[in-house]
Structures are given as structure tokens and as C-alpha cells.
Length: 371
Image 1 (cartoon, helix red, strand yellow):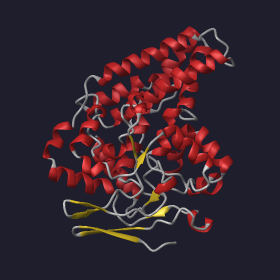
Image 2 (spheres, rainbow, N blue to C red):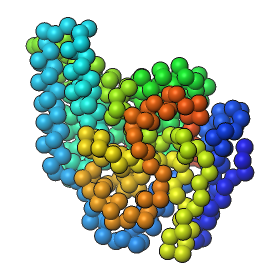
Image 3 (cartoon, rainbow, N blue to C red):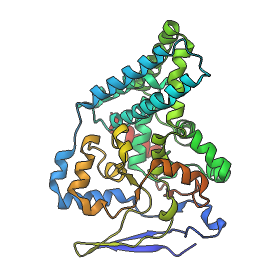
Image 4 (tube, one colour):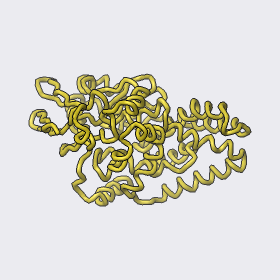
């Protein structure tokens, strides 16, 4: 493996080990390991020091709830419309793929916004609305997503706490053409099931309420409109996390792909060496952000998790010198294609950090902060 790359920003030195894209397979078949803190904390401090008005962008976005309610109503309307349509028909599949998967991807990401308390002022109201938003997914999901996603932000890259990271077993068995195709097709199952095998979280009354509400809704829906109508919901959820253009964001956000799988040079900003973010988080600024609450602004989101989706473009416009030099993803569809078919793109291509504390202690602290 290449010697670690050292970048210096003023009084801080970063060390990051990055094998070349054409390195031997024995070198590539391992995660990127770093001892440094994730890059977003430092960039947040730099931006706040230079642009104090950034704090004015933080806070909830009240109008989002109306969009979410419209999407939930749309999904329920299409499910009702398909109540007498055979599940194994082109009409059913096309509506589930075009409308259902696109809408449920927006539902997933609305729950993501709610996990940061960005729809209502009070956290409890966000939790309750997330349970309502969960309806078109078909299975209870929202209550579990929030604590796991908070861990992803607070301990990004931690081998135990960041369940967005693939496991070693996934890297071993799925880093080949068929394995990557299976992973890209069934991403939703990996993201749903992986956390339960890595890190346990406390089961709370919000989880119970989420389960009871969803099961009750599902039962009433099936009794009222039949199983064909109900299956539209979970099928839409599966397709939303499968080979769908909007699903490209799952891989695009944090996988080290293609030309980014190489060492990068530092940038000079205001006479000081500024290291571009280690190839760990990538932003996408294309048109699909219109359907996904600007989740493509992912560096911006990790830098300031409490800025709502409507204001992330304003953050980038306010501090362009911090974001324009960073690596970007041009196409989510292109990411899905290159991830599967380019030999250099593997499930190993993620940045990991050794967990230095007992992760149970970390989760206990997180639970305290959430209450």
C-alpha cells in the first residue's frame, strides 16, 4: 500500500492512506482506514469562522410538511387505483417504478429530514409526523432510522456505529460483478437489515408507536382495498432502493469511486493549505435533487446537518471556495452503472475508522441527547 498522504492545514496535519486504483487486488481488497477525524467538523468550523451568517440558514422548513402530505396522498391514491390490477402486469410494475419508487424515495428522504428535526420546531412533533410519513413504505421504519442516522453523522466511518458502512463479509462476497449487481438491486435490504447485525439501539415508546400505527394502517388498508392494493407500498419501497435513478444517491454519497480512488492534491485558499475532503463524502448537483429534497448536497448536509433542504444551495453559494474544489458526482445513474461494471469499484471502497470507545457508551450518550 502507498505511504500515507499527509496534508497540513495551518496547525493540523491529516494522514490518509489511499491505494492507487490500479494497485494489486490484495491491496484494493480492504477498506480505507484513517486515524483522522471525519472532515466535516473542521470544514464546519472554517466556514463558521469566515461566514457567521451561515447560522441564519439553520432551522426547520415549515412548508416541507405540505409536500410530504401530498406525496403520501399520491401514494395512497395510486394504491387504491391498482386495487383490481394484477400485481404481475406491466401496468402495475410501471406505476410502481415510475410513480411509486420515486415517491417512496422522497418518503425515505423526508424521514431523513425529520430525523434532523427539520420540519417542526419540537423534536417530538417531528417523530410523530415521521410515523405518518412512514405510511406508504408499508413497514415500520421511521423510528429506527433516526438513531441509526444520528450515529452515522456523529461517528461517520466508525466500524461499529456507522451502519451505513458495508461489513467485511459484504466486501468479501459481493466485490465482484454478480455480487455488486445483487447489492445494487437489493440495496434496501442491506440498509434495513445491516444495522441489526452491527449495533443495537434502545427500543422506545416511539418505536412501539411506529409499529402499532403501521400495522394498524396496513390491516385496515388490506381489509378495505385488498392485498393487490397494499402490495403497491412495499413493492414501491423495494424499487426505490433498487435499480432506480434516485437510488444512485445511496452509493454516490460515500463510496470512493472511479477517479476519486486516487490520492488528491491539497488546495490553497487564503494563503493556507485546505485539504479537500478525503474521498469520503460526495455531492451531486443535478436535477434529481428536485425529487429528493436536495440530498445530493451531501457535503453541505454533513457539514451543517441542521440546515433544511431548501437552504443547502444557499450554503454552497455563500461559501463556494469550500465546496467547488471538492470531488463531485455528475450522475446517479452513472454511479449505479460504474459501480456494477467498473472493476475498480468495490464494496471495499469506503473510509473506516477504528472505534476507540465502547460503542454501548456512545449509544447511551446519544440516547440521552435524543431525550
